[in-house]
Image: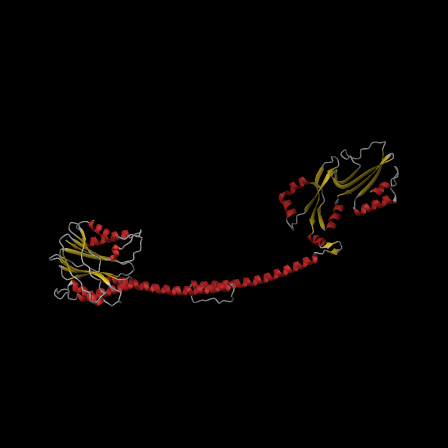
Length: 517
């Protein structure tokens, strides 16, 4: 611009000079639609070409003049007697914007200028976010410039056009430094190729691993279905030593254990069925009826700690005036004790074949010695049984008895006093040459005798306390007068059941009662 001003000698300017012509042609070639004006102004005549806010001889910038946006350059130089003023105007029109966008690899969508605030109001926040922050969005991006209002000089934000960027051109420009390829392109291509190769290998390995995982899971699912159907013999083949192989091996081990547990369960069910049948059979070993006595009643009951019991009670009816009372407790629990109890009962009945012949019937002491001889060593050296055996004759009220290591029976007098029957020898089955001492007791009307096994006094409550002999004696004192033998057994059994409610008992409980009317 300065060479053009220098051509103005004084206040004369040749507008058709070669320099001005070259300047105009260069300006139009570079910026289509541009305009250059040189004006000579006299200093004697006032002029108001510039707006009031422009108080400098030079200006360059973007202006908005009557709805048109343009780049405007102004330069004013004082000469002798005049002012030389040159103006260059480059409109921000479609030709100029297309030239700029084409050089930058972008597409101009809309060239209609609009103020920024109305544009934002029309587009909304969602439109601005999509256009400026979402990669690959088809929404055009606004180009905002700050232009001076030519009349007021106030800066205003204008959207002069909207463009749509070309990512391929951007990448192409980044890949070159001038006319040469940029130095980072080859390493980038190498890194990209390496990453693609790694990704391809990872994809291949992932597909192969996923196929193997799916195959193993499908096979195990089929095997699990077969196990659910009851086939525990199925096994899954192990195809490797990795974690999937360990999983399959664990599955096979689990299946083997389940098969073993099923066999154990079958054995347990069969054993429980046999024990249940044994319980039913044992119930028939206990007396089905009680002897009918003149002037007395008898009753007995037992409650096993397990399914079957090792306790025994029985009656021997000699006549309508005489009865034998047997209460025994075999050592051990469960099936072995039940078998030993059945054997003891069979031996006892074998020794009492001549019940109706008093002279041929053994005395209580001889009866205990016979049972000891028959039982000793039969079930091993450490198996024995405690026993109380007594014979009551209602004709004379005499009770003859022997106690072979059993719990001392409770004697309840007619006045309600409670005492323990004296006497006690070794249990039967320990030593073959053991002798037993017979004792006698005269029982009057209104008295009662309660025989029991140690499971009654050993019964535990929820606090771990035993029922004990003292509580048994106190409860016997509180029994109503005139209670029958059956009522005594039922009341005492209910009291012990309430005491041990909710606690598993570890010993059988047997109660046998004799009541003199």
